[in-house]
Structures are given as structure tokens and as C-alpha cells.
Length: 77
Image (cartoon, rainbow, N blue to C red; front, side, top):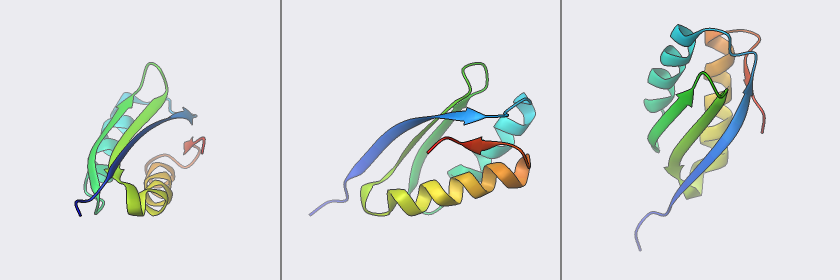
């Protein structure tokens, strides 16, 4: 059986810096199980393509990354 992948998009709050979005993307892409991540600064959206079995854990880690880069930024889960 192969690993199943899941791709989901979420709205982000308080993302006010394009540079921060790029830093978040880079850090999230290094999380184990993440295939790709795209943060659209203009639309305030994040799209994560990751392993289905660990998606919830990956999403929690991604949210922590966002708040580390910008304290007031978070993903609407």
C-alpha cells in the first residue's frame, strides 16, 4: 500500500508581511511528510499537500511555525 496524500487550503489571519510568508513556506516545507506548501500572501491562504496519515500533526506543526515567524499570525483550522 502506498502512502495517501491530502491537499487542503486554509485561511490565514494577521499575515501582513510577504517576507514572513516566504519564511513560513520555507520552514513548513521542511516538516516531515510535507510534499509542498504554498502561501498566497494576497489571498491570505495556505495550501498544504502532505501525507494523509499524519496530516493533522503536520497542520499543528505548520501553525506553530507561523506563530514563531510572526507572533500574531495563525492558520484558521
